[in-house]
Amino acid sequence: MQVFNNDKPVRAGVTQRNSPTPPMQVESAPKKKSKLTLYIVIALVIGIALGFILNKNYLYEENKSLEALDAKIA
Image (cartoon, rainbow, N blue to C red; front, side, top):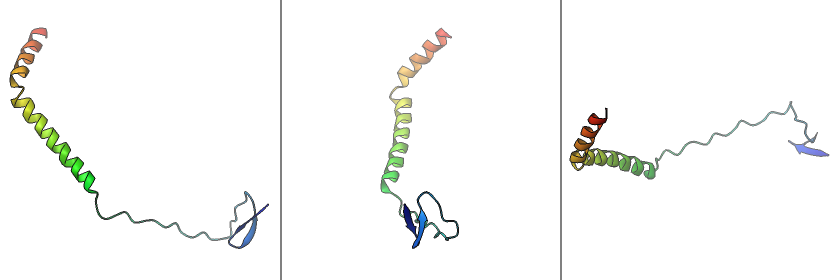
């Protein structure tokens, strides 16, 4: 069985060493960043800040009682 490579017959399974191969084309990365990534990062920062604020202010009494309980156990 013959496979044609660069208009020259070559047997199947045999590579042809003397024919130059064209260089691989590297596609350029898109220069515009995705807005979805920006939205995810913004939501992550807002979530961390909101969680910290709520933990310090809203759950202050519960945190104090848990600290006292931990002190008794330890």
